Amino acid sequence: MLQSDLIWHNAAHNRKNFSEKINQIEEQVDLIILPEMFSTGFTMHPQDIFETMEGETVKWMQKTATEKKLAIAGSVVILEGGKYYNRFLFVHPSGEINFYDKRHLFTLAGEDKVYESGIEKLIVVYKGWRICPMVCYDLRFPVWARNVEDFDLLIYVANWPKIRIAAWDTLIKARSIENMCYTIGVNRVGIDANNYEYNGHSAAFNCLGEQVVETRENMEEITVFTIDKNHISKIRNKLGFLNDRDTFEIKR
Image (cartoon, rainbow, N blue to C red; front, side):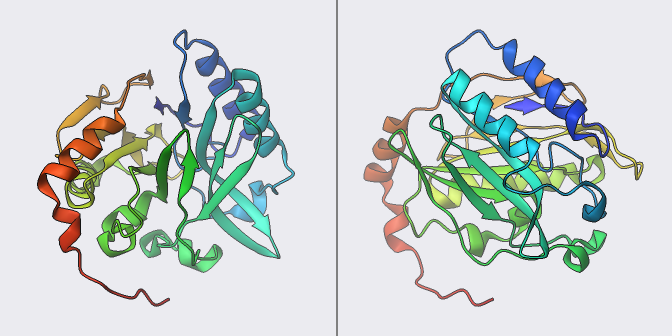
């Protein structure tokens, strides 16, 4: 997890900052997770900073993934088909990209007025893991995240402000318990151009809701940790709570 401050509307600077952080990692890692809109900060002015799937930030992610032989993930403002998306990108070591467009747009900030909502849930298959990516405000909507696909890992990337951080702490833990999966949340720190303060609280929980790792408050931090798929199969086989899931249909 790379918990970091973000420079407002300065993709080149943010890419450089994350490159420096990634180069500090001495351990062999499989996946690096960056915050939401890691190249710009959480902005309602996509027309000023948007990129495309052929843009510099996507190329940087692919270059980092292939050179470091790992996967890298985070969300970026993408223009496609004349519409702006808050797009979660999962880039494999091969350079292959899977993406998920944020479904629940943050109406309090007017995100729904300038971005297009995603309509499809994504399950990424990587190194034998089934991974479900989500973005920030999605965390408040458990039905959308409900584990009906038998995924192993739920990831949230965020710009979640300090004023509501108690909800972040509680909901990440809840998602891990109800879905019987690992849940990782990566949030930013610092103060953005709108004077919102972010204090991090990036964390990971196992499928019993036990915290695997946490980060220091208000600090930029590189956190390396290991999760074990055997933990999931052991607990699911013993408890079997997912067998009692409700059947439902989600409509747009």
